[in-house]
Length: 356
Ligand code: GYE
Image (cartoon, rainbow, N blue to C red; front, side):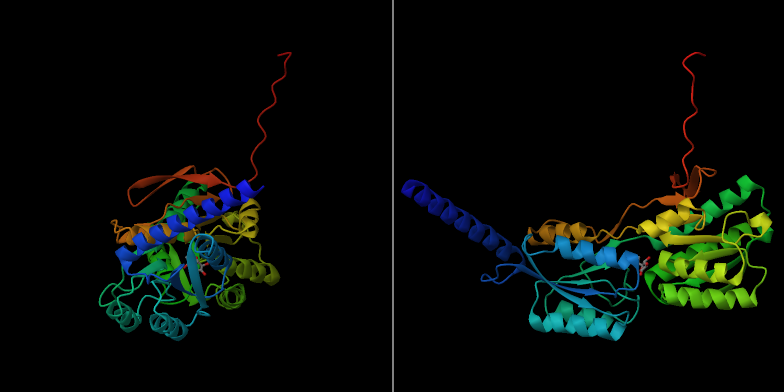
């Protein structure tokens, strides 16, 4: 027994020495204080407005955990830029090793980012972007929101063609995300590209701030003003949930049969089961997927920076397109072909009788 206890002590000592030397190696590369047991990361999150955001927060928290060697200081911006700027300043005062910022909008962060730069703290921008002029940051990882928009737009065009729907009869309203956020700017741009290319009628665009409640409010107003509307381009799934409620309460039908008077809903994210089930039912016709799992990506970036390895300035994640049926199998967006993932009821394979 005594021998086992001694051996255990020796193993613990070896492990401690190993840990200390590897921490020191990190210290040399990015000036993490030598007595720091963990890499401290201040993360300013946008808020908790959607299922996407909740999944993103979870991904960040689990990747940047103590178990993985991080001390995460998490701050919820409650969708307010002033709160996020305050968080960045607090992180600077606390002398964190890294700042991670998911900016609620693109403009308005330059002073705070210049202050972080002056303090020598690397800033990683996640999910949405900041405007690039005068806003210093180390690198960005997130989505190409315009491309997401173009994919959904190309799906709608291909669907209209496949169904023989005259595109001049498409009367679209846009339920927008938070104004000035990259997701709103990019997806909005994608829609305008489609409207111009295919001569669709864009009736109106109003802000729903990515929440179910506001999405519903905006849709109620649209339904009152535009009886001719037959397509809703909705800049996230949670707003789409509100949109669907509003349509159903108004007595109109949500669905994909535009010629028979259905209102067709398009959306973004595809993170929650609720959203995927709505696609299955045809209540959301198509979703441009938006990937929220940035935690492991951010931790890999931090590791690379610590080890003085090169990191890409801008990295965009791969995303696909979900639809209610396989009537459209592929689309071409910005010169690249994407397969459409059919979430609709799969037809059972045809039975073949053994006696045949
Ligand atoms: O689509 C939406 C959210 O920035 C990608 O923000 C994100 C968007 C996402 O709240 O649901």
